[in-house]
Image (cartoon, rainbow, N blue to C red):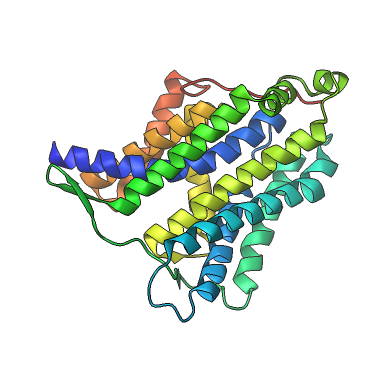
Length: 302
């Protein structure tokens, strides 16, 4: 029971990262039917940008100023949202009437551009970089299991961001426009909705969430690498499919379930089996529920 409680707590923590990144996948797929393979690399670029900014700001300071981490995190969210929006404007928007396969290939190409761009950038490169700020080991106990305050704060922040997106989509005029575009772009245009602007905002929000996840990943794990976006992006996309791609709530639920399953698999069989257990659970789930836990919500293409 103690082991199960520990792995459950770690799984919720891991699922918080998956859920945030899965939201970006799910929102873009829900509105364009595009699997944005570059989304994980937006996360990776955000980690390197935050590493550079924090490293420059922290020079000469022997103690961590968490207010600095917060404003750098907000800055990185804006920059990553801008990067995602720029990718939409330069790559995806001109191809919007092309075959969906062509857009997916373009997304793979953009992913490679970002990965190799980071690889050849001076000061970044292929080696693991030590993040300039890490969370302290202090925390609290639940029974005999120790959890850090950093884990709790990251879960709370992720939950608040996910709730914010859910309320934005479900309770605001902008969210109503997003749902209209997702349902039928042609009808949305006839109703006077600026479809291009709505899609750009969706990309910005997805990129900003990936930026937030990147900063929290760097702060907690203490190191980053140019391939981190591929692994995390694949797992986050899996979470989006598991929950029901195109479904906001499904992305969060899928992230939590994937994190818990992967954590329990690690505890029972070892770290090398974590991915095997997670994807086996995905296949099993999709046998019984092909559209995911909450079902798909996808757009009709123009």
